[in-house]
Length: 123
Image (tube, rainbow, N blue to C red; front, top):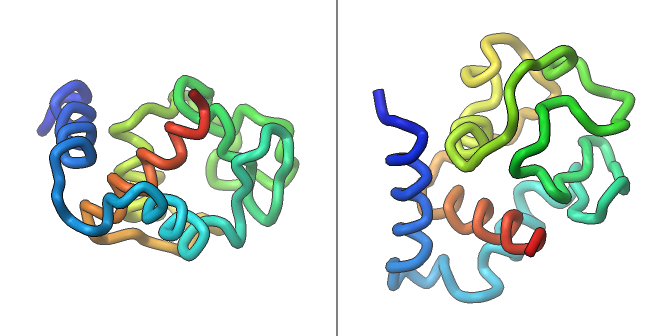
């Protein structure tokens, strides 16, 4: 099992050092809009079908005023780079039960670009 620090470092290193076109400045944004933006906003308190992802790092899962939580209701973990990566790879596998989030981002480089975009919006 990988440690959270190793996985987080791997994600950051992949984003920082990749020469892949998926990491052009706006590709994280394009991937977010294509795979996530229909259901999620990056504006604080602006929810769509899914909760706002603004400020997600360090936030307790299910911890916004989003009224439609079901799978994450009562969750006891805090979002970090590792568990966001696992969540968007396969939400049902991550949480261990069905969830309304049906999108899976299977490619490591796409997940890294989306995560970099989401977390970069908080700075």
